[in-house]
Length: 447
Image (tube, rainbow, N blue to C red; front, side, top):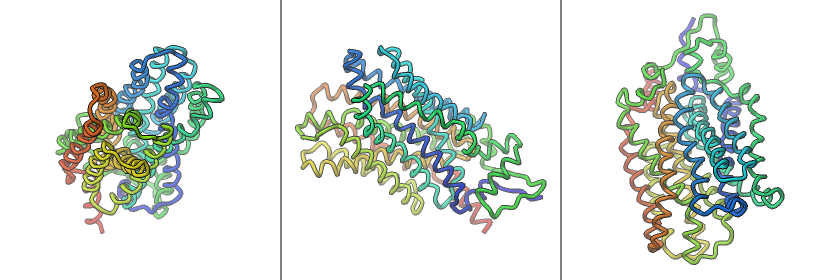
Protein backbone atom coordinates (compact mmCIF):
# COMPACT_ATOMS: atom_id res chain seq x y z
CA UNK A 1 0.00 0.00 0.00
CA UNK A 2 1.26 3.50 -0.81
CA UNK A 3 -0.04 7.05 -0.37
CA UNK A 4 -0.30 8.81 -3.72
CA UNK A 5 -0.39 12.62 -4.00
CA UNK A 6 -2.34 12.90 -7.27
CA UNK A 7 -1.46 16.56 -7.79
CA UNK A 8 2.25 15.83 -7.51
CA UNK A 9 1.94 12.97 -9.97
CA UNK A 10 0.14 15.26 -12.43
CA UNK A 11 2.72 18.02 -11.95
CA UNK A 12 5.67 15.72 -12.69
CA UNK A 13 4.08 13.85 -15.61
CA UNK A 14 5.36 14.18 -19.17
CA UNK A 15 3.03 15.28 -21.96
CA UNK A 16 1.51 12.25 -23.68
CA UNK A 17 -1.62 11.10 -25.49
CA UNK A 18 -3.75 11.47 -22.35
CA UNK A 19 -2.83 15.14 -22.04
CA UNK A 20 -3.43 15.56 -25.76
CA UNK A 21 -6.94 14.12 -25.40
CA UNK A 22 -7.77 16.51 -22.54
CA UNK A 23 -6.39 19.42 -24.59
CA UNK A 24 -8.41 18.35 -27.64
CA UNK A 25 -11.75 18.19 -25.83
CA UNK A 26 -11.23 21.34 -23.77
CA UNK A 27 -10.11 23.31 -26.85
CA UNK A 28 -12.99 21.95 -28.97
CA UNK A 29 -15.52 22.95 -26.32
CA UNK A 30 -14.01 26.45 -26.15
CA UNK A 31 -14.15 26.74 -29.98
CA UNK A 32 -17.89 25.96 -29.87
CA UNK A 33 -18.23 28.38 -26.95
CA UNK A 34 -16.46 31.16 -28.87
CA UNK A 35 -18.62 30.57 -31.96
CA UNK A 36 -21.82 30.75 -29.93
CA UNK A 37 -20.77 34.00 -28.26
CA UNK A 38 -19.62 35.70 -31.50
CA UNK A 39 -22.52 34.58 -33.68
CA UNK A 40 -24.97 37.25 -32.45
CA UNK A 41 -22.65 40.08 -33.41
CA UNK A 42 -22.06 38.60 -36.86
CA UNK A 43 -25.79 38.28 -37.55
CA UNK A 44 -26.91 41.46 -35.79
CA UNK A 45 -27.42 43.70 -38.89
CA UNK A 46 -29.67 41.07 -40.49
CA UNK A 47 -31.57 40.51 -37.23
CA UNK A 48 -32.15 44.26 -36.79
CA UNK A 49 -33.46 44.55 -40.34
CA UNK A 50 -35.82 41.57 -40.14
CA UNK A 51 -37.16 42.26 -36.64
CA UNK A 52 -37.21 46.02 -37.10
CA UNK A 53 -35.44 46.82 -33.83
CA UNK A 54 -33.58 50.00 -32.92
CA UNK A 55 -29.84 50.05 -32.16
CA UNK A 56 -30.61 50.48 -28.45
CA UNK A 57 -32.86 47.42 -28.36
CA UNK A 58 -30.34 45.49 -30.44
CA UNK A 59 -27.70 46.26 -27.81
CA UNK A 60 -29.90 44.77 -25.10
CA UNK A 61 -30.52 41.70 -27.28
CA UNK A 62 -26.78 41.11 -27.59
CA UNK A 63 -26.09 41.81 -23.91
CA UNK A 64 -28.68 39.24 -22.79
CA UNK A 65 -26.10 36.51 -23.42
CA UNK A 66 -23.58 38.41 -21.28
CA UNK A 67 -26.04 38.50 -18.37
CA UNK A 68 -26.49 34.76 -18.77
CA UNK A 69 -22.72 34.24 -18.81
CA UNK A 70 -22.39 36.08 -15.51
CA UNK A 71 -24.82 33.66 -13.87
CA UNK A 72 -23.22 30.67 -15.61
CA UNK A 73 -19.71 31.61 -14.46
CA UNK A 74 -20.81 31.76 -10.83
CA UNK A 75 -23.38 28.94 -10.65
CA UNK A 76 -21.62 26.25 -12.67
CA UNK A 77 -18.19 27.16 -11.36
CA UNK A 78 -19.29 26.33 -7.82
CA UNK A 79 -21.58 23.44 -8.80
CA UNK A 80 -18.79 21.49 -10.51
CA UNK A 81 -16.89 21.23 -7.24
CA UNK A 82 -19.97 19.50 -5.79
CA UNK A 83 -21.44 17.26 -8.53
CA UNK A 84 -18.45 16.74 -10.80
CA UNK A 85 -16.82 18.71 -13.57
CA UNK A 86 -17.57 16.32 -16.45
CA UNK A 87 -21.32 16.36 -15.82
CA UNK A 88 -21.39 20.15 -15.53
CA UNK A 89 -19.41 20.60 -18.77
CA UNK A 90 -21.88 18.32 -20.58
CA UNK A 91 -24.87 20.23 -19.18
CA UNK A 92 -23.32 23.51 -20.32
CA UNK A 93 -22.65 22.22 -23.84
CA UNK A 94 -26.29 21.13 -24.08
CA UNK A 95 -27.47 24.54 -22.83
CA UNK A 96 -25.45 26.71 -25.20
CA UNK A 97 -26.01 24.42 -28.21
CA UNK A 98 -29.75 23.93 -27.82
CA UNK A 99 -30.65 27.50 -26.88
CA UNK A 100 -28.37 29.17 -29.45
CA UNK A 101 -30.08 27.01 -32.10
CA UNK A 102 -33.46 27.85 -30.56
CA UNK A 103 -32.73 31.56 -31.02
CA UNK A 104 -32.79 30.86 -34.77
CA UNK A 105 -36.49 29.96 -34.50
CA UNK A 106 -37.52 33.20 -32.76
CA UNK A 107 -39.29 36.10 -34.46
CA UNK A 108 -39.29 38.89 -31.86
CA UNK A 109 -36.66 40.59 -29.66
CA UNK A 110 -38.02 39.30 -26.34
CA UNK A 111 -37.99 35.59 -27.19
CA UNK A 112 -34.62 35.99 -28.94
CA UNK A 113 -33.17 37.63 -25.83
CA UNK A 114 -34.59 34.90 -23.60
CA UNK A 115 -32.96 32.17 -25.70
CA UNK A 116 -29.64 34.07 -25.71
CA UNK A 117 -29.80 34.50 -21.93
CA UNK A 118 -30.23 30.74 -21.44
CA UNK A 119 -27.46 30.02 -23.96
CA UNK A 120 -25.26 32.51 -22.11
CA UNK A 121 -25.62 30.50 -18.89
CA UNK A 122 -24.08 27.52 -20.67
CA UNK A 123 -21.42 29.63 -22.41
CA UNK A 124 -20.35 31.15 -19.10
CA UNK A 125 -20.57 27.92 -17.14
CA UNK A 126 -18.26 25.94 -19.38
CA UNK A 127 -15.32 28.39 -19.19
CA UNK A 128 -14.14 27.94 -15.57
CA UNK A 129 -14.60 24.18 -15.86
CA UNK A 130 -12.45 23.57 -18.92
CA UNK A 131 -9.81 25.95 -17.53
CA UNK A 132 -9.77 23.97 -14.28
CA UNK A 133 -9.64 20.63 -16.13
CA UNK A 134 -6.70 21.68 -18.28
CA UNK A 135 -4.89 23.10 -15.26
CA UNK A 136 -5.39 19.99 -13.13
CA UNK A 137 -4.06 17.56 -15.74
CA UNK A 138 -1.24 19.64 -17.28
CA UNK A 139 2.41 18.97 -16.35
CA UNK A 140 3.61 21.83 -14.16
CA UNK A 141 6.31 22.97 -16.58
CA UNK A 142 3.79 23.31 -19.44
CA UNK A 143 0.74 24.42 -17.47
CA UNK A 144 0.37 28.04 -18.59
CA UNK A 145 1.25 27.13 -22.18
CA UNK A 146 -1.41 24.40 -22.38
CA UNK A 147 -4.12 26.47 -20.66
CA UNK A 148 -3.56 29.44 -22.97
CA UNK A 149 -3.32 27.17 -26.03
CA UNK A 150 -6.62 25.55 -25.06
CA UNK A 151 -8.30 28.89 -24.38
CA UNK A 152 -7.16 30.25 -27.74
CA UNK A 153 -10.00 28.13 -29.10
CA UNK A 154 -12.20 31.04 -28.03
CA UNK A 155 -10.57 33.21 -30.70
CA UNK A 156 -10.77 30.36 -33.23
CA UNK A 157 -14.52 30.18 -32.57
CA UNK A 158 -14.86 33.92 -33.14
CA UNK A 159 -12.94 33.70 -36.40
CA UNK A 160 -15.02 30.69 -37.47
CA UNK A 161 -18.22 32.64 -36.84
CA UNK A 162 -16.88 35.54 -38.91
CA UNK A 163 -15.76 33.29 -41.80
CA UNK A 164 -18.89 31.12 -41.92
CA UNK A 165 -21.34 33.86 -41.07
CA UNK A 166 -21.40 35.64 -44.41
CA UNK A 167 -22.01 32.48 -46.46
CA UNK A 168 -24.62 31.04 -44.09
CA UNK A 169 -26.54 34.31 -43.85
CA UNK A 170 -26.56 34.75 -47.63
CA UNK A 171 -27.76 31.17 -48.19
CA UNK A 172 -30.11 30.58 -45.24
CA UNK A 173 -30.71 33.95 -43.62
CA UNK A 174 -29.47 34.98 -40.17
CA UNK A 175 -31.14 31.88 -38.74
CA UNK A 176 -28.54 29.65 -40.43
CA UNK A 177 -25.62 30.71 -38.22
CA UNK A 178 -27.70 30.00 -35.11
CA UNK A 179 -29.00 26.62 -36.26
CA UNK A 180 -25.44 25.52 -37.06
CA UNK A 181 -24.53 26.17 -33.43
CA UNK A 182 -26.73 23.26 -32.33
CA UNK A 183 -24.34 20.65 -33.77
CA UNK A 184 -22.05 20.31 -30.68
CA UNK A 185 -24.88 18.71 -28.67
CA UNK A 186 -24.17 15.53 -30.67
CA UNK A 187 -20.73 15.32 -29.03
CA UNK A 188 -22.01 15.19 -25.44
CA UNK A 189 -21.88 11.35 -25.21
CA UNK A 190 -18.22 11.46 -26.27
CA UNK A 191 -17.43 14.19 -23.75
CA UNK A 192 -19.02 12.13 -20.96
CA UNK A 193 -16.94 9.13 -22.00
CA UNK A 194 -13.57 10.69 -22.78
CA UNK A 195 -13.15 13.84 -20.67
CA UNK A 196 -11.61 12.75 -17.32
CA UNK A 197 -13.33 13.71 -14.08
CA UNK A 198 -11.60 15.93 -11.52
CA UNK A 199 -9.33 13.81 -9.32
CA UNK A 200 -10.21 15.88 -6.24
CA UNK A 201 -13.89 15.07 -6.84
CA UNK A 202 -13.16 11.36 -7.34
CA UNK A 203 -11.16 11.24 -4.10
CA UNK A 204 -14.00 12.93 -2.22
CA UNK A 205 -16.43 10.33 -3.61
CA UNK A 206 -14.09 7.38 -2.96
CA UNK A 207 -14.00 6.29 -6.63
CA UNK A 208 -10.50 4.81 -6.45
CA UNK A 209 -10.70 2.59 -9.53
CA UNK A 210 -11.41 5.61 -11.73
CA UNK A 211 -8.46 7.44 -10.18
CA UNK A 212 -6.15 4.50 -10.87
CA UNK A 213 -7.32 4.36 -14.50
CA UNK A 214 -6.63 8.09 -14.95
CA UNK A 215 -3.22 7.96 -13.25
CA UNK A 216 -1.97 5.02 -15.31
CA UNK A 217 -2.79 6.95 -18.49
CA UNK A 218 -1.50 10.29 -17.26
CA UNK A 219 1.71 8.96 -15.68
CA UNK A 220 2.57 5.50 -17.06
CA UNK A 221 5.34 5.17 -14.44
CA UNK A 222 2.65 4.78 -11.77
CA UNK A 223 1.90 1.12 -11.01
CA UNK A 224 -1.36 0.67 -9.10
CA UNK A 225 -1.33 -1.58 -6.07
CA UNK A 226 -4.15 -2.93 -3.88
CA UNK A 227 -4.92 -0.55 -1.05
CA UNK A 228 -3.36 2.54 -2.62
CA UNK A 229 -4.54 5.70 -0.84
CA UNK A 230 -5.01 8.80 -2.97
CA UNK A 231 -4.66 12.26 -1.44
CA UNK A 232 -4.53 15.91 -2.39
CA UNK A 233 -2.17 18.42 -0.73
CA UNK A 234 -2.97 19.68 2.74
CA UNK A 235 -3.47 23.18 1.38
CA UNK A 236 -6.30 21.91 -0.81
CA UNK A 237 -8.09 20.07 1.97
CA UNK A 238 -9.07 23.24 3.79
CA UNK A 239 -10.90 24.27 0.62
CA UNK A 240 -12.24 20.86 -0.28
CA UNK A 241 -15.87 21.91 -0.11
CA UNK A 242 -15.33 24.40 -2.94
CA UNK A 243 -17.47 27.00 -1.16
CA UNK A 244 -17.57 30.73 -1.80
CA UNK A 245 -16.17 31.40 1.69
CA UNK A 246 -13.08 29.31 0.99
CA UNK A 247 -11.95 31.97 -1.52
CA UNK A 248 -11.23 34.21 1.48
CA UNK A 249 -9.47 31.71 3.76
CA UNK A 250 -5.74 31.01 4.24
CA UNK A 251 -4.74 34.53 3.25
CA UNK A 252 -6.45 34.43 -0.17
CA UNK A 253 -9.09 37.11 0.43
CA UNK A 254 -7.25 40.23 -0.77
CA UNK A 255 -5.82 38.43 -3.79
CA UNK A 256 -9.30 37.12 -4.67
CA UNK A 257 -10.61 40.70 -4.78
CA UNK A 258 -7.60 41.77 -6.88
CA UNK A 259 -8.37 39.00 -9.39
CA UNK A 260 -11.96 40.25 -9.55
CA UNK A 261 -10.83 43.83 -10.21
CA UNK A 262 -8.35 42.65 -12.86
CA UNK A 263 -10.95 40.55 -14.67
CA UNK A 264 -13.54 43.36 -14.55
CA UNK A 265 -11.07 45.79 -16.11
CA UNK A 266 -9.86 43.32 -18.73
CA UNK A 267 -13.34 42.29 -19.87
CA UNK A 268 -14.31 45.98 -19.95
CA UNK A 269 -11.50 46.53 -22.48
CA UNK A 270 -12.33 43.44 -24.52
CA UNK A 271 -16.04 44.22 -24.90
CA UNK A 272 -15.53 47.96 -25.36
CA UNK A 273 -13.28 47.19 -28.33
CA UNK A 274 -15.45 44.43 -29.79
CA UNK A 275 -18.51 46.70 -29.61
CA UNK A 276 -17.09 50.05 -30.72
CA UNK A 277 -13.71 49.64 -32.46
CA UNK A 278 -15.06 49.50 -36.01
CA UNK A 279 -17.50 52.37 -35.40
CA UNK A 280 -14.82 54.59 -33.84
CA UNK A 281 -12.34 53.93 -36.65
CA UNK A 282 -14.95 54.55 -39.34
CA UNK A 283 -15.97 57.83 -37.71
CA UNK A 284 -12.30 58.85 -37.73
CA UNK A 285 -12.27 58.57 -41.54
CA UNK A 286 -10.31 55.36 -42.02
CA UNK A 287 -11.10 53.22 -45.07
CA UNK A 288 -11.12 49.85 -43.36
CA UNK A 289 -13.06 47.61 -45.68
CA UNK A 290 -15.34 45.16 -43.92
CA UNK A 291 -15.74 44.66 -40.19
CA UNK A 292 -14.82 41.04 -40.88
CA UNK A 293 -11.18 42.06 -41.35
CA UNK A 294 -11.14 43.72 -37.95
CA UNK A 295 -12.61 40.66 -36.28
CA UNK A 296 -9.99 38.43 -37.87
CA UNK A 297 -7.05 40.74 -37.06
CA UNK A 298 -8.15 41.26 -33.44
CA UNK A 299 -8.68 37.54 -32.84
CA UNK A 300 -5.53 36.50 -34.69
CA UNK A 301 -3.60 38.89 -32.48
CA UNK A 302 -5.35 37.39 -29.46
CA UNK A 303 -4.19 33.89 -30.41
CA UNK A 304 -0.59 35.04 -30.80
CA UNK A 305 -0.74 37.01 -27.57
CA UNK A 306 -2.19 34.11 -25.59
CA UNK A 307 0.39 31.68 -26.97
CA UNK A 308 3.33 34.00 -26.36
CA UNK A 309 1.99 34.99 -22.94
CA UNK A 310 1.54 31.37 -21.90
CA UNK A 311 5.02 30.46 -23.11
CA UNK A 312 6.54 33.36 -21.16
CA UNK A 313 4.47 32.56 -18.07
CA UNK A 314 5.95 29.04 -17.93
CA UNK A 315 9.49 30.43 -18.13
CA UNK A 316 9.26 33.64 -16.13
CA UNK A 317 7.13 34.95 -13.24
CA UNK A 318 3.54 34.78 -14.49
CA UNK A 319 2.40 37.77 -12.44
CA UNK A 320 5.03 40.08 -13.91
CA UNK A 321 4.37 38.76 -17.41
CA UNK A 322 0.75 39.86 -16.92
CA UNK A 323 1.76 43.29 -15.60
CA UNK A 324 3.79 43.80 -18.77
CA UNK A 325 0.96 42.62 -21.02
CA UNK A 326 -1.55 45.01 -19.40
CA UNK A 327 0.87 47.92 -19.83
CA UNK A 328 1.25 47.02 -23.52
CA UNK A 329 -2.57 47.02 -23.74
CA UNK A 330 -2.74 50.52 -22.24
CA UNK A 331 -0.17 51.80 -24.73
CA UNK A 332 -1.62 50.12 -27.85
CA UNK A 333 -5.22 51.16 -27.11
CA UNK A 334 -4.09 54.75 -26.53
CA UNK A 335 -2.27 54.72 -29.90
CA UNK A 336 -5.49 53.76 -31.68
CA UNK A 337 -6.75 57.26 -30.93
CA UNK A 338 -4.19 58.87 -33.22
CA UNK A 339 -4.02 59.03 -37.01
CA UNK A 340 -1.69 56.53 -38.67
CA UNK A 341 -1.36 54.66 -41.98
CA UNK A 342 -3.90 51.87 -42.41
CA UNK A 343 -1.19 49.16 -42.47
CA UNK A 344 0.21 50.40 -39.17
CA UNK A 345 -3.31 50.60 -37.78
CA UNK A 346 -3.90 46.90 -38.45
CA UNK A 347 -0.60 46.10 -36.72
CA UNK A 348 -1.67 48.10 -33.66
CA UNK A 349 -5.11 46.38 -33.72
CA UNK A 350 -3.32 43.00 -33.72
CA UNK A 351 -1.14 44.05 -30.77
CA UNK A 352 -4.28 45.30 -29.02
CA UNK A 353 -5.95 41.90 -29.52
CA UNK A 354 -2.84 40.18 -28.16
CA UNK A 355 -2.71 42.37 -25.07
CA UNK A 356 -6.44 42.43 -24.26
CA UNK A 357 -8.11 39.15 -25.27
CA UNK A 358 -4.75 37.37 -25.06
CA UNK A 359 -4.06 38.83 -21.62
CA UNK A 360 -7.51 37.77 -20.40
CA UNK A 361 -6.62 34.20 -21.33
CA UNK A 362 -3.31 34.36 -19.42
CA UNK A 363 -5.14 35.94 -16.45
CA UNK A 364 -7.48 32.91 -16.38
CA UNK A 365 -4.42 30.64 -16.47
CA UNK A 366 -2.93 32.48 -13.48
CA UNK A 367 -6.17 32.33 -11.47
CA UNK A 368 -6.52 28.62 -12.19
CA UNK A 369 -3.02 28.05 -10.77
CA UNK A 370 -3.57 30.36 -7.81
CA UNK A 371 -6.45 28.39 -6.27
CA UNK A 372 -6.11 24.83 -4.91
CA UNK A 373 -7.55 22.10 -7.12
CA UNK A 374 -10.63 21.40 -4.97
CA UNK A 375 -11.85 24.99 -5.24
CA UNK A 376 -10.40 25.89 -8.63
CA UNK A 377 -13.64 26.08 -10.61
CA UNK A 378 -15.26 28.10 -7.81
CA UNK A 379 -12.37 30.58 -7.82
CA UNK A 380 -12.14 30.98 -11.58
CA UNK A 381 -15.93 30.98 -11.96
CA UNK A 382 -16.40 33.78 -9.41
CA UNK A 383 -13.62 35.82 -11.01
CA UNK A 384 -15.23 35.51 -14.45
CA UNK A 385 -18.69 36.15 -13.00
CA UNK A 386 -17.66 39.42 -11.35
CA UNK A 387 -15.57 40.33 -14.39
CA UNK A 388 -18.60 39.82 -16.62
CA UNK A 389 -20.06 43.00 -15.10
CA UNK A 390 -17.24 44.83 -16.90
CA UNK A 391 -18.29 43.21 -20.17
CA UNK A 392 -21.87 44.40 -19.63
CA UNK A 393 -20.88 47.91 -18.55
CA UNK A 394 -18.36 48.64 -21.33
CA UNK A 395 -20.61 48.84 -24.43
CA UNK A 396 -23.07 51.08 -22.57
CA UNK A 397 -20.47 53.45 -21.07
CA UNK A 398 -18.42 53.80 -24.25
CA UNK A 399 -21.66 54.29 -26.16
CA UNK A 400 -22.45 57.27 -23.91
CA UNK A 401 -19.00 58.72 -24.58
CA UNK A 402 -19.41 58.21 -28.32
CA UNK A 403 -22.74 60.03 -28.11
CA UNK A 404 -20.95 62.99 -26.49
CA UNK A 405 -18.86 63.31 -29.68
CA UNK A 406 -15.56 63.53 -27.82
CA UNK A 407 -12.25 63.58 -29.73
CA UNK A 408 -11.18 60.10 -30.85
CA UNK A 409 -8.16 59.95 -28.54
CA UNK A 410 -10.34 60.56 -25.48
CA UNK A 411 -12.63 57.64 -26.35
CA UNK A 412 -9.66 55.31 -26.60
CA UNK A 413 -8.10 56.76 -23.45
CA UNK A 414 -11.27 55.76 -21.61
CA UNK A 415 -10.70 52.17 -22.79
CA UNK A 416 -6.98 52.28 -21.99
CA UNK A 417 -7.34 53.45 -18.38
CA UNK A 418 -8.77 50.06 -17.23
CA UNK A 419 -5.61 48.40 -18.61
CA UNK A 420 -3.47 50.55 -16.32
CA UNK A 421 -5.73 49.73 -13.37
CA UNK A 422 -5.52 46.00 -14.19
CA UNK A 423 -1.72 46.13 -14.26
CA UNK A 424 -1.78 47.50 -10.70
CA UNK A 425 -4.42 45.10 -9.36
CA UNK A 426 -2.66 42.00 -10.73
CA UNK A 427 0.61 43.31 -9.27
CA UNK A 428 -1.03 43.37 -5.83
CA UNK A 429 -1.96 39.67 -5.93
CA UNK A 430 -0.08 37.82 -3.16
CA UNK A 431 1.79 35.31 -5.31
CA UNK A 432 3.21 33.61 -2.22
CA UNK A 433 -0.27 32.30 -1.33
CA UNK A 434 -0.81 30.67 -4.72
CA UNK A 435 -1.15 26.93 -5.17
CA UNK A 436 1.56 27.18 -7.84
CA UNK A 437 4.14 28.30 -5.25
CA UNK A 438 3.08 25.60 -2.79
CA UNK A 439 3.42 22.92 -5.47
CA UNK A 440 6.88 24.07 -6.47
CA UNK A 441 7.97 24.16 -2.83
CA UNK A 442 6.65 20.63 -2.26
CA UNK A 443 8.53 19.39 -5.31
CA UNK A 444 11.74 21.03 -4.12
CA UNK A 445 11.44 19.32 -0.73
CA UNK A 446 10.77 15.89 -2.24
CA UNK A 447 13.62 16.05 -4.77
